[in-house]
Length: 336
Image (tube, rainbow, N blue to C red; front, side, top):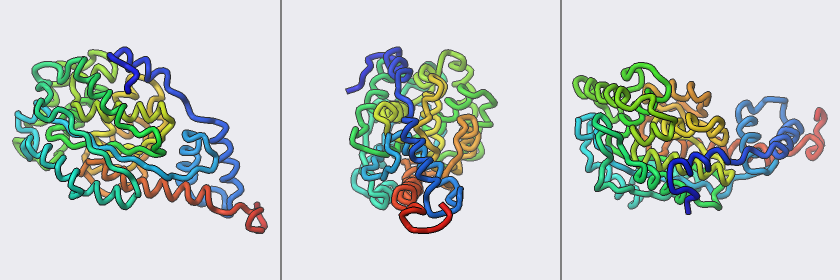
């Protein structure tokens, strides 16, 4: 069960998180230098393997139990026409996930990952954040706890994804409030809005930031401008850190959730790597603000954890090479 009952308790838990195992990371670096390849020949795969080793406390790790969690929530601002789809699509897509029909189901199977789906009070959309805070403290704590409790302690890699009509609007507002800039700089087409609908979306983001910006740290900003599924992703990312489970971040919405942690506690995302660069325009800017370089750039903008699920294969490849290649000594190759 979650180790906090209010936002101050969550902040305290976040501040007390463990760091990486430096001995394991150094051991991984030593092993990497002995493998049958020229130095640096595997590029970022070498960096990824050593990062993962440091968080798992094992200089020669492999991935055996990746977990993908999709959280779903509804947003009050959707009633203002910020999405190309109606709010009832959230519940319909949850059923699709549960029946195995979505993209994330196929990608999870391919990656050998378990897939868990959590719908969060879909019958109770968040408040419209242009009129007041999206969530009460109790509501955001419940959502953070739902994410925290959804993480399997036996997992050795975590991906979190989302479904929620209106949630790119929430992510844009969070990003603008946390990092500054104009609403238009952070607001993209999301589900495909354009013209008057896009102008409405930008207006909604601007009004939300004007009402709630500069009201506190990232967690308070999350309460005011976020959604239940966004808070749950943040809770799961934090829980993974407490368990030393590395995390692959998905697209714009997931990264906005993670940013709320980073803007609350320095170093809160050291156990996270960016899985991909999505086609949602502001994602690149958000990753730059967090100093995260994506592993993939395939023009995806689906959400659901889909880009990060694809990146599981890259992390697996990095570790298979790192942990299973022969060293120069083992192979009897001159040059080590």
